[in-house]
Length: 69
Image (cartoon, rainbow, N blue to C red; front, side, top):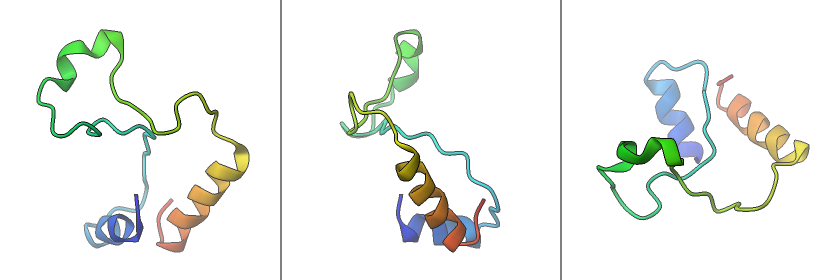
């Protein structure tokens, strides 16, 4: 997520965001992603680290600076 993504969301008329903090496409476009959903899918660059309050607050502040909730 970056400023370009947030600006595009606003241009498209979005007012609110639902954020899922994993990177499903880290290994490229995978058309079989949904086939194994019971075993979990997606990877994260933050593996083994919990999100801290300050991380989430910083992310929220960034959303809000682009007029998003």
